Image 1 (tube, helix red, strand yellow):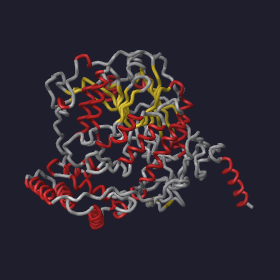
Image 2 (spheres, helix red, strand yellow):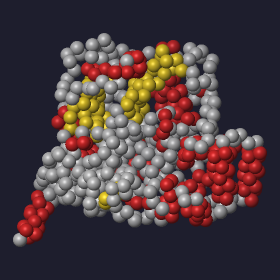
Image 3 (cartoon, rainbow, N blue to C red):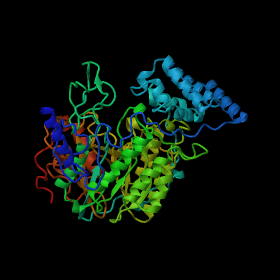
Image 4 (spheres, rainbow, N blue to C red):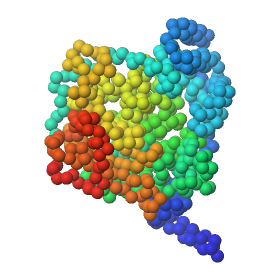
Length: 631
């Protein structure tokens, strides 16, 4: 009788949630496999890999076979490598081992087929027991089968050279066994003319503002296993195969059951992601929102040997359809490509890497077509983005020029950054950015730069980072009004300072370590993430933006406290976290009409450095308005 009653109830509940026609409230451990928070006209979002979600064993297309090389090409390359080795610049034993190993693989890739190189990589991995480096899978599943990364490593190895420092760069960024390679000297005169005297300051604020939403790192997980192990010891938690080896628990008997609203070591479940947009509608008057920016990362963090091109495409299509359904047709979403917006994750190659079609063109074409279909970019911009790594430049109806760039071309896990390493712009992304900024400067147009991985720091290789810094310094603050990133899953600010001696217009090759910390030029706004991974609360931001200068005048952040996810009933609880002016200028010393620019955040940073207690300062959680000193 009890089982029969349950079956009847399940049938009634299923009939309520049928094609978005009804609405059903859910308890935290309710195992209903589809979203229970309405998605408007958007698609049904699934849990635990149900519905049309591609299976974990879905195979993806292989890239084209390696091209055959002439005898002359092979011999020339061998000579080049021998000469470079003979000139030796190695100090560390581990560094020498790493560089020599990669060099040997490079030589092998010049004559072996793509499949043979994949077999070599598997055999080396198994012989040396390198399973800790293959994303919790096996050597075979990582390089072949569903993982399928072997052919991509073969492509990279064939293009690498000691002559351009590729092996040292690879061994430094990937394994930390070598010293950092020297930063390339960049002749700025080959990129832009010196900054004009009338472009050293930003225009005066207009005083009227528009609202802009900033959200990032969606990472929706259609395989999220409600009630599964949320405290796993390997891989991504909240999956049906998640386990805790220390506690001998699995998703059948979890030490911490996964709430349908999310957990700290898991990707975003459907109802958490949808509730973020619901909280935007509750806390922001969307009629006042001019547009939104999404700073990248769509797909989930599935293991390499469980991910596929089909799953990436499914998740990307679902995400942008959801964004449109939730924000409506009146709020454009200006997006950028994140490292988790491709398959394999983070991999991107320049168009001239191979003689044939770029292996990742399918993704650029897909994403740009989705952006155009939703009405966020036009046909000309879509065509450029489809053939140029998802990059585009678009002018909003308010007159702001938004330049979206693919930051994977400085992202350290993108293995294709480790050939011809000394070239800071193999893809041409930064040349595109520079050309756009030159045109905007001539037109006296203000610009936002939107990317995913912040330049500099531990996630970006040095050469494109220092070139990007040069570009930002040259066009700030008169042309560039803001720089925006995601990726860190944290609410961060990144400051760009001018170079020491920058007033010397004849200086075209910079010392990138010599900065003038008395001259802050630009701030990078790094948005919080929707995803809680790893050990973060979900969050999003709203900016008040001057309608003439397009600089941010104030900002508020809202968050969902994931530690409460097992106690929420029906939907996640999103709370106000802080108001930037109230929190970081409580005595109202900053002019009310002045933007929260690099000078403002430099002042905040200096106060924190002189008073460590400010770093730990708690922010008000129960006040959504400033304290009255700003009008």
